Length: 163
Ligand SMILES: Cc1cc2nc3c(=O)[nH]c(=O)nc-3n(C[C@H](O)[C@H](O)[C@H](O)COP(=O)(O)O)c2cc1C
Image 1 (cartoon, helix red, strand yellow):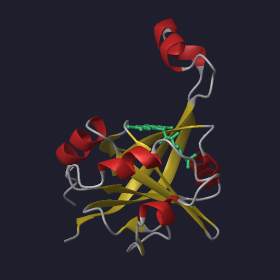
Image 2: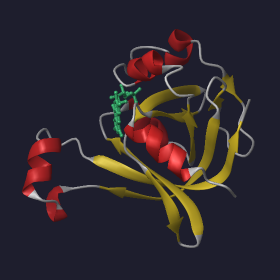
Image 3: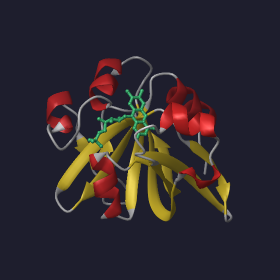
């Protein structure tokens, strides 16, 4: 499976990509700027870091899968900003951003039809970060109010380009 890792990592660090989750009938997406993709346990794995305060965290805790959608460069930059500044607890981001929730091939979380590179992932592990092995500088700069990330390890079951 071709993972398009260079492209994903480039977009993560330059603007962000969209992490979509679904629990029951609720679908939500949020912007992530961190993440990594590599081989773990003999599988292709995409790791996404989600702070406990995010609505996405609530949904992922009730789900076993997620999708990551990479938009074309700058095409939906404003929407990436919106999805990174507003919570699905308060707004329907799919509606506000006019995103199409397109059925995925292998998981029940949809992909975003307006994006062009898509990852469908099944959660195979997760780790709650905490201060015990973290440098003081990182705690001070990133976790002053606690609100640690959970790292979700998603096995990439599909990766493809649309358009
Ligand atoms: C460029 C950018 C990158 C972000 N990266 C992350 C991230 O990696 N992890 C995270 O938990 N929040 C990240 N955020 C913040 C969430 O996207 C933001 O809090 C969002 O409103 C959460 O939505 P939700 O409550 O619907 O899940 C980022 C925001 C922006 C603008």
